[in-house]
Length: 430
Image (cartoon, rainbow, N blue to C red; front, side, top):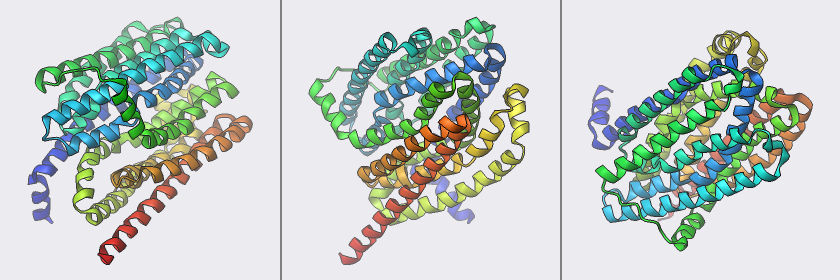
């Protein structure tokens, strides 16, 4: 056992995987800790209604994040990982993807302006929505997909750390009363934009990447090529953020505040696996190509171990949920306790979805099956959500989200296992 562990650690590929996992863990740690510091503070300073407004604005702009990402964090990462030794190809991939993201960013801003000008619901707080859109600008500039593909995530760890710490501190310094609600999205957006600009500068200086605007034909090719995975990611957004949007329309900002506070705490707990799965994806791309059956077995083992690990933390979290909500958010957020308990299933379910969906189906090139599962889940979620949210407010929204995630898990596992069995039969026939 010790010998195997030594061979794993000293293997060049495994060393890279571990380094990327460490870097991504630092980033994820920031993403977990900083909101847990700012949200309780903002609840006390701004109130539940204003915090609900900020959550609602974030949910709205997340649609634009999905549009500008356009699944490039998967497709471009995979392309760069495969062509990592071809500098000319890396240059080409970068400019194709970056030009596409800038085109989609411009389209997103036009759509947002139309909403703010012609939809009365959004007009009262349009400054909040515009400032929150700054997050999308920063994320579009940040080429995380490039660094992830070349498996050198440490380069962006320092940039993110500096940017997020500085501008999160600014929230505590300048946001002092409810009238300062606009400052919270402003400083958050400045953090993202600063990180994006610094990362591009680093890319140009140290990796000798030249930013060149590509023709619309090449942008169109990128959009067509990634359409199935994009639509799948869009469907995921439809059953996560649409829940918040519908809840806001039906029950108001306070209901959004109670639901989103619990959901974000659960997502924070679940996101502990994100650094590992992000680092695993380019590695598994190669493994699936070299040894499909062996890679599948590795994913199954990881899934079992990850599930057990999550249970160790989530069972006590369920038992002490009331104390956790009080500690993080204060006594005024007790309405979030039940939501927190309902949603504790989500971290395990999302982890298994990632293992069998992204790590297996996407790396096997089975984007259509991935899309079909998400489509079916989205339809079920919208039907459930409209009914349950209307009658049970944020409690119904939570139940709808859990049922939808369960549907996704069953679908991803079914297609992943079916494709591996088909591959085994193909080998036997050969």
